[in-house]
Amino acid sequence: MRILITGASGLLGRAVYKYFNDSGHQVLGLAKSRLKNAERRPDVAEKNRDATLELNVNVPANIATFSKTYNFLLIHISTDYVFDGKNPPYNVDDKPNPLNFYGETKYQSEIAVQKANSQAIILRVPILYGEVEYPDESAVNILLESVKLSFQDVAKVIKEISEKVIEQKVQISGILHYSGNESFTKYQICEVFSKLLNIPIDHLKPVDSIPTSVAVNRPYDCHLSTEKLLNSGIDVSCIKFNDWWKNYLGSKLFI
Image: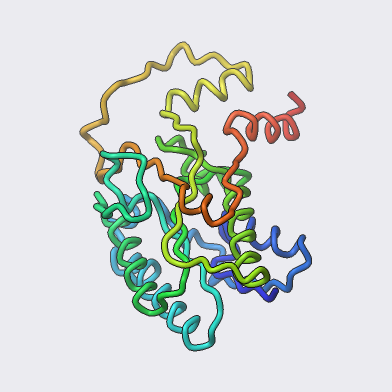
C-alpha cells in the first residue's frame, strides 16, 4: 500500500509512520513543522480559536475533499472529547455534546469530513500515552484523568483497518471507536509510578470532586464502546497501562 500521513512529526503520526514503514508499505509523512500543532489541551485551543478552527476543521475538510476526488481511503482521527462524559460508555451513534471549544471543533471536523466524503473513516480515540520527545507531548504524561490508550495500539489499529479495507476489500466506513478498558485518576496514575519507581507519594491526597477553578470544562468519563470496531474484525486488544510503563521505564532506568 501507499500511505500518506499528515502530522507525521506528532506523537501518533510517528507511531503510525513506523508501523506502516516496518511492514514494508510505501509511506510518506507530512508535517508543517515540529511545533506542537496537534495541541490537545483545551485551554490552549480556547485561547487560539482561529488557529484551532483552521487546523481541526478546515484542513480535515480539504483533505476529505481530496480523498473523494482522487478516490483514496481517508482515516480521520477524532477524540472522545466530542462527548460530555456523563453517560459512558459511548457508542458510535450516540449524540455528541462537547463541553469545550476543542471538543466542538473536533465534532465540527467529523461533520465536515463526512459531508465531503461519506466513505471516510473517523476514528475516535481517548488520551494517548507513550514515549515522547518532550514531557507535555502526551496529556497522560502531565496526568490528566481519562481512559488511557497507548499510541502504539492506535497505530496498530489504523494499520489493520487500512489493510482490511484496501487489501481485503472489507467494507468499513463511518465512525469507529477505539479505547482501552482502564480508567485512572491523576492520583491513581501517581500510584502506578510510585510502585514502579519506588517513590513515596504520602504527601499527595486524592480528591473526590472536580476542581471548580479550571479555565475550561473537561468531560469526566468518555469511555468509548469498541463494539463496531470489533464487529468489523479489528483486534481491539491493548497493552495495560501499568505493563507499558513497566517495560518502558525498565528499559530506560534498568528497574
